[in-house]
Amino acid sequence: MNLFQGLTLLLFAGLAVLTVSAGVRGTVRKRVVLFWLSLWVLGSIAIAWPRSTAVVAHTLGIGRGADLVMYSSVLVMIVAFFYTYTRFKRVERQLTLLVRRLAIQNALTPSDRAAPGAGPSSPDPAARSEA
Amino acid sequence: MTVASPDIESPPSHGGLAERPSLASARVVIVIAAYNEAQSISDVVRELRTQYSHVVVVDDGSSDTTAALALDAGACVLKHLINRGQGAALQTGITYALDQGADLIVTFDADGQHDMADIARLLEPIVQGRAHIALGSRFLGRRENMPLTRRFVLFLGVLFTRVMAHARLTDTHNGLRAFSRYAAQHIDLQLDRMAHASELVDQVVGSGLPYVEVPVRIRYTEYSLRKGQRSSAALRVAFDYLMARLTR
Image 1 (cartoon, rainbow over the protein chains, first blue to last red):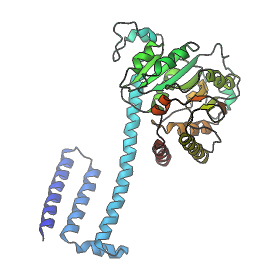
Image 2: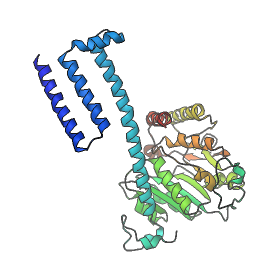
Image 3: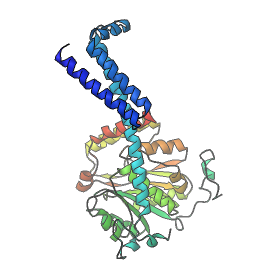
Image 4: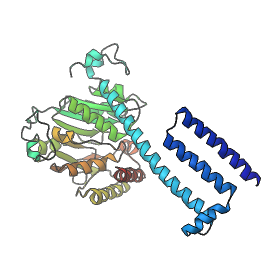
């Protein structure tokens, strides 16, 4: 076992411990814990026994184990990108709805102009009762 | 028939055109989305206010005095606490206008490139019951000092919309538009930034409501061009629009 393998396995072991403890504390859902845990375990196997990836690769018709790792990580990254993108869009949408709600609630009419308390952030609620 | 919520299934003629108000009695609300338009907003609002009593300016998180100037000029001001983009700002203004009982809603640009005289021309087909939506077109009308690159990018936009939305429009990215109350109720802009223009065309075509294009005059000034979109922004617009179609 070389230095790279030792360090990476140590890192993965630490991450696995963190993942499990997060699952035990209940801050992360069980599904997510299993996902990350399987990732750490599979990664550890691939690092500890580099030949093992070649076996899987050959059965899939891919020449080298390293290629298999690369293809699958690209695939995972694309999926992750779409997941993050849709999530991001959802948050943006919610933010817009929130900003819109606040804007409409705090609408300033020209009559607010003269009112002394008609600051930009705290319009007099009574002043907009005309609606 | 004012109580029954109109649904898209029912033919448009029963959806509000029948009880259309005359232009004189209709509550016309002008909606302006503004982001850092302190230089032009006062004049734009003041001019509009000479003929239209309800002008709504949505200040889209400006860092300058746009909101205060618009209020001083006689507009209702809605403030987006955070910049959300033109599509979001227009939708905020439209939602508010509907809340306020608008019969007719007009969207107008803040940078002074639109001509107030065109508003009446846009409202005409709606009031006459020929359409629910009137879209301004600079290619049917006059355009002053339009740069060649702008013309090319807008042509691509028209082509794009023709392919994606199957709408034969001459100008898909014109901010001057008019909606009947009924049509405005069927519009829900979800693309916050500039892709809302294509989204709007989709919704207009998808709603099955009759629409017309009306020639309008666009004044390209040094200011409006500087404030306007860079041609390269078209790529971002196309990306936003396509991703929305893919992921929805």
